[in-house]
Image (cartoon, rainbow, N blue to C red; front, top):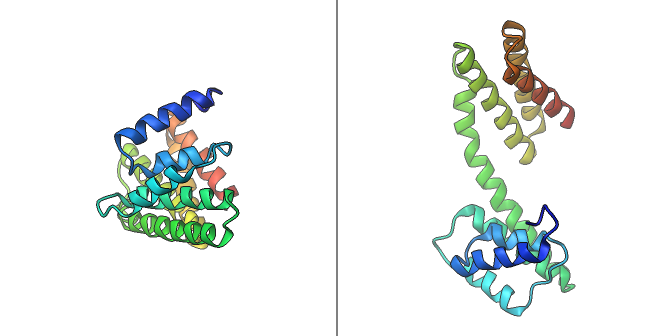
Length: 178
């Protein structure tokens, strides 16, 4: 709804989601990310209560910190906003770092048939994206180069398979982004 310009309807949908599950940090962040909505005291209290819940997912926790950061920024509370943004970024970085070993294992598998190689290329790309997001730029560059190399060979060997050309293009794009 937000994307098609129905912001009021998007807010209503987000609020209904929060009524069902108030600890959904991504929903709070989606509201904050609208840039036009200002959280009231009840919203801020609800987000703080959600953070006090032990059983919320790490992703919800960092999104809640980002949303609270935006709420405090809107109120002119720069120090508190900064603390929430810093905490959210640290939590997000830890979560991203925890995914790196999974993609590393996929990326170092022995070359195989074309579908397996494509899966390995996608794993290299995802690994590079993770590393880029956590600031490991040299490693990300190497991962994107490996992505490009894998898909370049696949595209040459199977020129009629669009997925391999798309993988090669994505690898090139990621190289340019680093």
